[in-house]
Image (cartoon, rainbow, N blue to C red; front, side, top):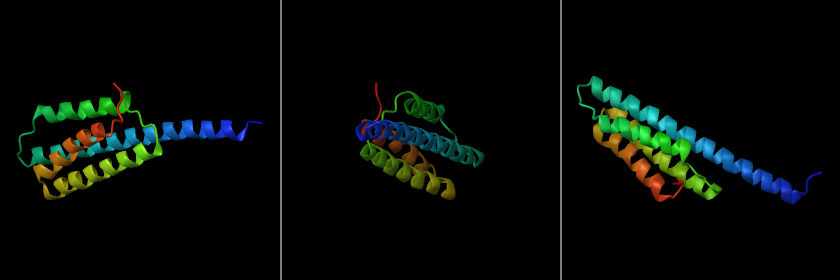
Length: 120
């Protein structure tokens, strides 16, 4: 039978895996939502810069290959950043307004980097 210490260590390791998996998934959901918003703007006649598509790819790469959530605290901070971005992107889509759409997405990458949750 495993000791309580070994079980606690194992639980912590699995929670770290869970946190990273959830954050990665939520970042990809934001990428999809942002891309859908860009499509709506494009359908309304706005010119969409290829730079935005590149930024989606960059954030996706960071999430899949460099995400390194190490604590529940980091996880909660990342969730808060993602939720804020989601609110802004949703408003941009609803109002067909480029400013909150871009602001939500671009600030997400910046805010997540500020949390130091990506490894090099």
